[in-house]
Image (cartoon, rainbow, N blue to C red; front, side):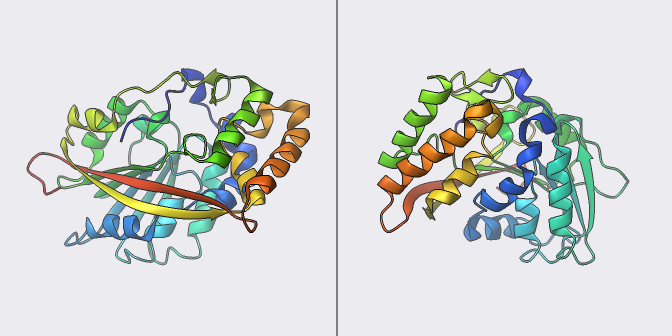
Length: 283
């Protein structure tokens, strides 16, 4: 799993990036495949009191998916630089968390520290967010705070920008007519090309015992859902277009309606999970 983005340091912001779009993020971002959720839950087999640390949690997709499957979760730490996202995530978990306690940490992932003793994470997850982080520092933090046999799971499936299909290619071209050829990333930066593979980051960390798991995913988007999704991305969020955003969304709707078949746009992709443990643990 190579890193999809290399944002500039300015991308590491707080509510400036996705704060206004938190509700759209919760509504339009695809969730985790069921098979991936069950794989994560299986890593906690035999763990008496599992503790989840979810880095770059966004609106809490990972813990929301895990709670109904991993009923034994006793504590969840949600970490994000975006306070609005954390508010949405905490509210979404409240009706389903049962006796599981939840803490939130607003800040960069590598600066996280547990709020209290006895909460060493046994599962550390990072879904679609590792590229935003200082990865060596994050993995050093994980080594400091994690339980001895903890599992680190780095997950992702690219984006509609990287997906190869006729309709996504036309969509990229339309975005570029408004914002220029360079792909936007973060609040002021642009995409600068691929960097190290996540596997290399893990290999240089304490969690160097890595296995890769790939799950095919077939999604059916409506044009309206794609427009909602675009509002949540760093490459097409509303603030980038200023007073042209309404015109942009109207153009996107026309384009996607032309490409849709029966009102549907198909995306066939893979969701990749890297499971990493310290040497001596089972991967």
